[in-house]
Length: 107
Length: 416
Image (tube, rainbow over all chains, first blue to last red; front, side, top):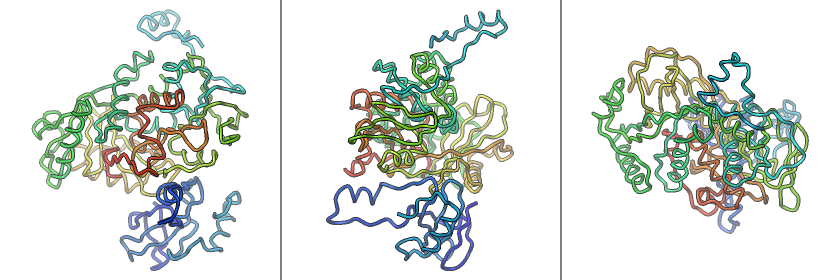
């Protein structure tokens, strides 16, 4: 079972305690954007086979949203961090790069 | 390659020589340098696409490229249910086309796919569900899909092992499709592969696509672990890995990959000769010809490529079904497996042109892939050969941008 550590309350939570929320760090395109940008924001997902940054909610715990870095091919969790981050923390990216030398980096 | 027909006479003839004379069902060629069309993915959908390219449009200079083995993805991992009782017109059209092609598939392919139109029930267990299914019945009647609403007494007559009295979720009736049912999933892939091979197409297994080449916005070919292959048209039919292939081709799809799992019990004597879907409690069940109870549930909610399930989903599915089928509480679970399904925003597939000229995608079938194989191949072949297909028209990947969703939350008979 997938276990993620909530960065707020520090609880190591099983996936039954959590609600998945899809890809993280989406750039919101709203009024004034092109149709393509808005379509991309709403629907086009990276959906990578490998390192994935995603949103989770500690639904049956503190109830807060947080972010996680996880490998979709192995379910290995690299780390979790607060939802207020606009991009993955540098030290987390470095840790991922150590474990996945072939990873092209966050973009 | 020339195929000998399968028949009762062939069995008798081969019996004379101790069954040593059977030929390979399909050839195992090495890829050539160039094809008119290349299909990536030798599962049901990819093989059906190739088959109808040949059968309906005479296009036989075709290769079907497969990373693993033939039918080893979702074609071999589903619960083999076939139905077409969808709400929206475009869905009903393509799923009913598929269902009708299943009726004659064994004869068309000269391969026994064991299509068993045993009837299919979708239980109404809440007042809202009852209203929803009655609406679907009305829609189906207008669409020419034969379904009807049946009352609890008839449900009990069709499925004596069912407890229709609750306590939590009494059975209030069911949406009944008498010509829905099951088929042998592997045989569908094998039958199409044999027919494709007989038309002179190359089915190439153990060959992974490592790159997609295009020039001037038009597809030029693919790079594979067995060398470069040029093609005029490229069909990506790789459910589960659609986003990975799209990334190679340089565009994104409105798709996320999720794990869907199923399980079978130990084999028991015949006890249920219809397919039952119970959507409120997230489970569906049928009995295989071997006697196993085949049970499916919902998907995981997070992106996943691991082709394995999670224990809590098994528990959730079985816990729910035990109330409606008390007798299964004593059954041993024989095995459990997972497959990776493409999920789109509206739970309907993509059969579409793409930003790269000459590249077509057929994916996003979510939890409803197996039942749609022949209809999907039919429409995809027409789209690839003619650039236009009435069945595929509504399933363009650009429908999300244009706001023309085909909202099918009923696709698996579970709330995804």
